[in-house]
Image (cartoon, rainbow, N blue to C red; front, side, top):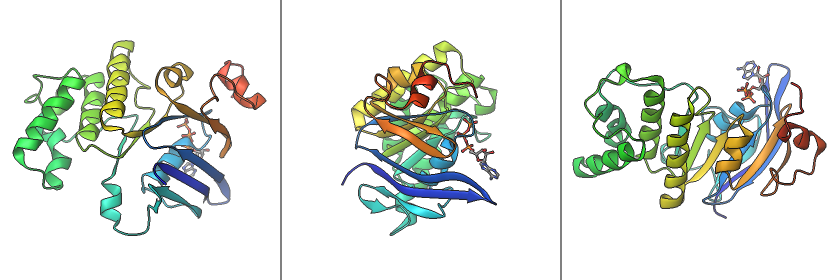
Length: 239
Ligand SMILES: Nc1ncnc2c1ncn2[C@@H]1O[C@H](COP(=O)(O)OP(=O)(O)OP(=O)(O)O)[C@@H](O)[C@H]1O
């Protein structure tokens, strides 16, 4: 079975249940938006999918393979994650983007071509030699995207990647997410607070609350079945 499958995942920190029997299916090439109020467990779920954290019980499968079985490095390399706050090495833009590719032993010509493509996609052509720490906040986040894109991951995990950005930067990122999804059939899981962003980008969505998936599917945004989801989508859920 291809795509991402989260099955009955639970996670506790101390006595507190952060994820309670969470299950989700994300088909190959879909863009899944994960919506929900603050503290719902969205970031924790993303960290578990990205192998930064292990569930207490349950499993995560990518293309039918348990992410913790087999070669871990290979599995980790089939995913890439972008966080809300960009992190950059104190090198220039080119070296920042090239980093993951060099680790993977990709040859120079291929690195050049992928970086060119990624920087063009993110409106950063010509910034190759600029010192990464001197970039604006929006540019730094675009750099973080470029670094994830060049890896051509099977699964791209985005944790509120546009939360701190102005509309122009949001538009560039959203266009880039769509582009990589269409061009490489990258499966995307996008945690977002913005129902508008979910509408613009996602092909399916899940609504989480209090560590649980309330509902998920292709009709969630247009036709939610649970009253809590409906309230959240209509901006009526006070949290
Ligand atoms: N390491 C930890 N120790 C204690 N509590 C934690 C830890 N990690 C997460 N939590 C708690 O688990 C709950 C879920 O956190 P999480 O960050 O996954 O939620 P979220 O839906 O991503 O929220 P937000 O939208 O605010 O980022 C929160 O109540 C948080 O305080």
